[in-house]
Every structure is written in structure tokens, then in C-alpha cells.
Image (cartoon, rainbow, N blue to C red; front, side, top):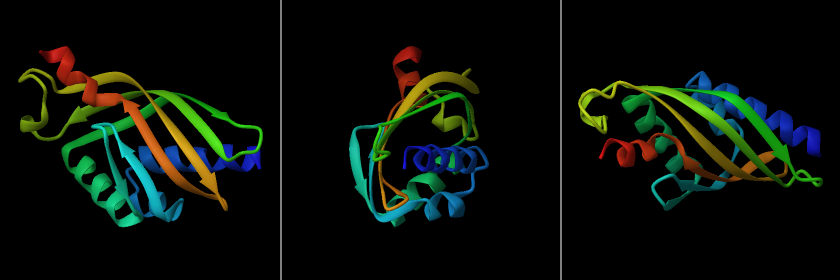
Length: 133
């Protein structure tokens, strides 16, 4: 179970880096709980699809230096990583000169029946607004 969760999250981050929403949606439950970096919870696969489409329209991100930790039973996991990204629209930048960003981030996952049931992300580009102020 532990190794299958590690492989599942590997597929998740490969699909994330490829900006492949269809593959990402295959990895999550229909009733996915998604805790967005801005401190709100969205429920359901379709809400997650909308979130990903909006993110892909605003910025292009690549996860690197990925470390995945998995509980003994494989039901819980965490990932720590860095994000290299760039803004696709000038209005989304925290400061006029901010085109690219490198930030640290982390995500917690709950896994059941071989798919992701919860995604809770922290850090990432949302921290840039505090840096730009």
C-alpha cells in the first residue's frame, strides 16, 4: 500500500508538471476535498478541474526537488517541493516586474481505494504577494 501511494503521487506530480488536467482527474475521487492555498475548501472533481484550468491560464509551474513521504498504511502522504513558475498574464503578478518565481511549497494527501481523496496545499506562489509588498 505504501509503495502504491508513492507511485500514485509520482503520477500526480508528473501530470501536474505536464499540465495534463485529464490525467490529474483520473487520479482523484469524484468527491475530492481540495484545500486551496488561499484557505478555502473546494469539493469534487469538477471543482478541481475548474481550479486547474484557471491556474493553467494564469501561470505555468514546474515542481522540482520533490520529496514524498508516505504513512505506513499508505493512507496519508506529504510532499515537499519547490516550484518554478512564470505568470502568463501581467495582471496576475504581485509586482509589475515579477515574471518568474521560485518558491517552496508542500501538499498533504489522503488516499483511499487507490485514488486521492484530499489535497491540501500550502506555500507556493500565493506567498509571493507578501514578498512583493
